[in-house]
Amino acid sequence: MAAKVRHIAIAVKNPEKAAQFFEQAFGMTRAGNAMRGVYLTDGIMNVALLNFGEEPVPGFETQKDYEGLIHFGMWVDDTDRADKLIKDAGGSYMTGRFEKDPNVFYEVKYKTPEGIVFDVTANGWKGAVKDVVPAGGAKAA
Image (cartoon, rainbow, N blue to C red):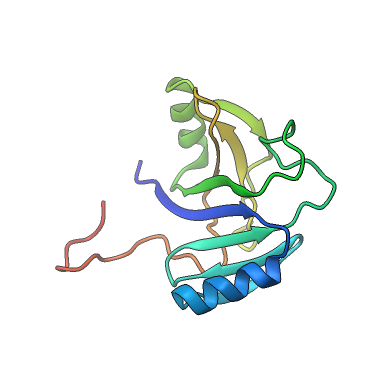
């Protein structure tokens, strides 16, 4: 399975202010609006800057007003195979369902054996690109 890290979600108090920082400091561009904030891209990765307000941040339910990294996202070829490999490796399902519609950017959340939250999708994220050719011309594995 050739999974690619293509998404990072960050909890912030002010998504607009955080987006302006990422735009100015790193030259990222807006990929669109999220239900709770802003999606940015560097042309390969999608970064979601999200404000959960009074709702608990998934994976950080016991931490009031959590700010910081929430989870990372893996783009896979086959979600059924990824589910099996994750569970066989000791990971556990958290929430969500796989969408077969390629126009739906929805992912399924899991935890590593250590409790680190991540999600998996076969549809990708706005502004993210699955396959990238690195410098030197060799295709990324």
